[in-house]
Image (tube, rainbow, N blue to C red; front, side, top):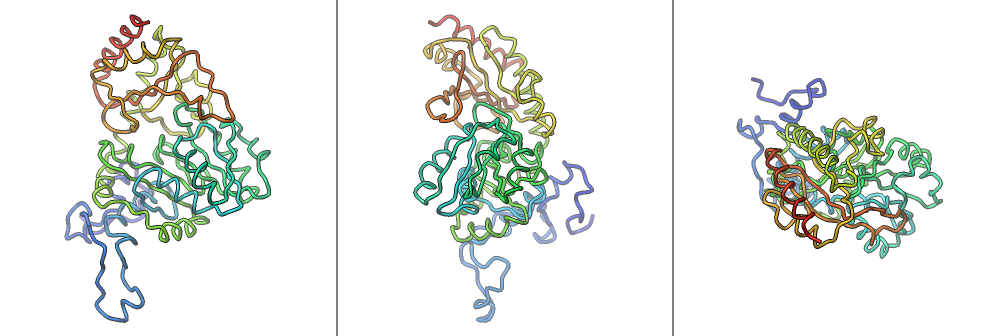
Length: 395
């Protein structure tokens, strides 16, 4: 076997590229994986080297071989000019916004956005003089009507957080490009395996490595990638702020990368099966999953996406929160936690109505978000079946 990484990996299949991306055993004494490099101080052999910062990694905040491995691999996977790694998914979102906005700018954000993103826009960005307008996530090409002379960026998220509206990313990109407006996207649900962000015209893309890159619910990590136009502003903003990811988390991200395609496809298969099973339940009013033929966003999903992850939601028929609690509190296999993307199944109740400002959340009953893990589906269905019996029995 050659002692260097294969060149021109685009000729290989997806799984082959995931195994080899960002890896060079010849740099690591032949070991398969890039090890964990911990450190802040980097020593220079001469005064001239120090004064000119002549080193691959001049200081710990500027990266390590471990960080470079994952940055390189993720850029290849996402089709990006470059990637920076942050300490969380939310940090990845904030660094992307700060890279393309300044005081006096106007930002457009979908009403269905991840709630911490909304919190950052309404808090920090407002204090910094950036005005945020929330828009209907289904507006599509109509986004152009919301542009102002000072509109600098459009944030997108497909599907929407919690409520799974499917945004028409190509239409939004086309409208924004006509005005030289930066398009950002939170692509955590699909990852670049199911939606290639930069090939679809997205300028700055965010993924939470905490989710499917990890696969084990055991790390906090964010990836922000950019195309050629926006790579330098993103890179410079990141260097100025040094929002660094931890070495152990980066190493675990690299390890998870190698099996992500296999896990995602299994999450997709399991979740679609479960979504169809839930759609047939008498307690369920509707299922929010864009890969289902009955979903309003299915046509866009089928046109633009290569797959679907394990995350979706359901709206129940009218029921009290006491009944919902009876259902959820007695579940044996479904955990109740705010994250997702790991091997375990999760379910959480939610109500976006209090923080929606543009679109009305109109639901017949309570809503539940599911992440379907890698357990046996029959066991998961039996657990939910017992839960629905408790829901029905409780007033």
